[in-house]
Image (cartoon, protein in one colour):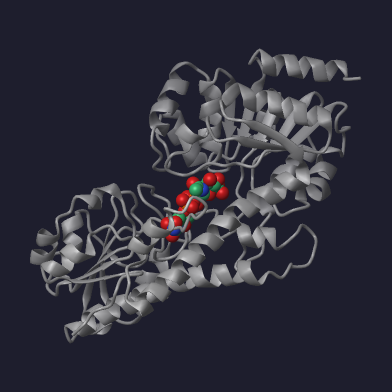
Length: 449
Ligand code: SAJ
């Protein structure tokens, strides 16, 4: 028998009169807040970063994300979105609270739960009667039952006068505003009433499937999805090395292999970055309050992907050595420092390792990225050709669209030494070599003297 309070909250959600509060307005929280606002809910946002709140109120988005600025303007104009400085105020005024704070890694590659713990402390001391609390942050298995619920139940009864669910975010940076509405979502629940309320809520915003499951499965599924991708990229990276040994082109091999209906060989590249893939395998292997689980394949995949920037540096060194030069006496131009194409995010970007190592070995590094001011210690230039002019090598680390139409003849004419290291296979290697560029790439046949 469902309580009166439950029926009241369900009715608020169904009629979109429920007030939603999003805690943490980063790459997950902001698109989530604005997508719910665009779906018709009145949404309040909160973040520890006051500058971010000031910027948002003026319509400024803090990171590159297609369509997000337009969505913010629209939601500000129709008064569907506003921010508050105090988390307690948000909790007080909202019926549904969605927590989107980060759970990064510590320097010892263990989950750093401090942001989430801070919020849970505030929630534990708040009056939550009649409210639904949703956690979207990625969490180590066991966190929901052993950490989240005890906090929420300090003053309330789960399933009776407070409800909670774990709904892992599944946003793909770069296409977040589009995909958030179509990507199926997983609702992890501990009690049926909470699962039902959360399901009703997400069905109002997304057209994709809303799957309900046990909370432990939801926790682990999120982490396994990204681990799956990380391991597959590692396989591609390892196969690319095998291709180099056999003297064949990985990209051509990939096309041939992927013509098989049950094969999806991923792309080899300079390594794996971003806020999710380098982190989630470690969350998977570090259960809440438990010992680290050993997994050879997952750890090995992490090691393979982490070793890729080193391979990039080796490629640069071999290209230079072909022309009698070394890293220490060379000027090297870098295109792209973001972790993937067309985003501004540089977290865990392979560019960091590549640039740091080049600088350590004495290279003069010039960096261009249209999306970010980050340069990892290299000299930043504001024009893409500024990284090519007079350089001894051009290294493409991120395949931003901006670079796609660059013409190889212009690159060659501007370089001091004609070396191109293409870690994303943006250019046609045959064409590059046909105009006497020293073209090197991950998974591409090496140079012959
Ligand atoms: N990468 C490769 N080869 C590939 C695919 C990716 O080297 O074949 C590299 C990328 O260059 C990048 C890293 O892996 O450095 C991660 O890229 P990604 O596109 O797989 O993932 P993210 O971290 O941008 O976002 C993912 C999302 N996955 C996809 O879009 C396929 C998303 O679904 C998840 O919800 C998100 O992580 C998350 O929040 O966990």
